[in-house]
Amino acid sequence: MTDFPVAEQEGVKPEGRLYRINCHDLTIETMVQDCFISNGLNFSFNGKKFYWTDSLTYKIWSFDYDYISNTLSNKQEFINMKTIETGESPEPDGLTIDKNDEIYSAIFSAGKILHFNQQAEITEIFKLPTPKITCVTIGGSKNNQLFITSAKDGSLGGYLYKIQLNKSLNGKIKFVWGGKS
Image (cartoon, rainbow, N blue to C red; front, top):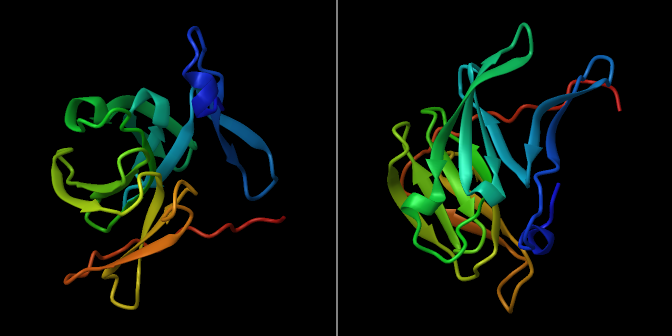
């Protein structure tokens, strides 16, 4: 993938890929080509939709996913951060999805977690005390906590943050590697 400082140079071409490693025979398949920074990804609760972030396009994309044939199709722009986030460089980074298929996306340069419903509308904003937010996941015994990672940048970067919520987010069970290593 292209790194942020390199991508800011004029004329940089998308050279990144999104790969899938088959857990049965360890073959590697290219699922998406010609991206800049392949990032946050997750499946809908029923496994029929796939959401994926290409950070330097400032977009979260949606695909239809066929589990039997292991194919992605119908690539569509789901969220374009440039149209909704006014920050100087609002790169979406890691994301998680709850059982209602609502997306929580870390916004790398903005110090925020944005919560989107299935209509791609922002329903909540969580502000963190450092700008470089890298990923978010749902946890806690009642699924009522957000755990957020950050990149080292200033005195409050490089830490793990937790936000306690007054509601359950019905977090999805994470997929666990089922193959050989």
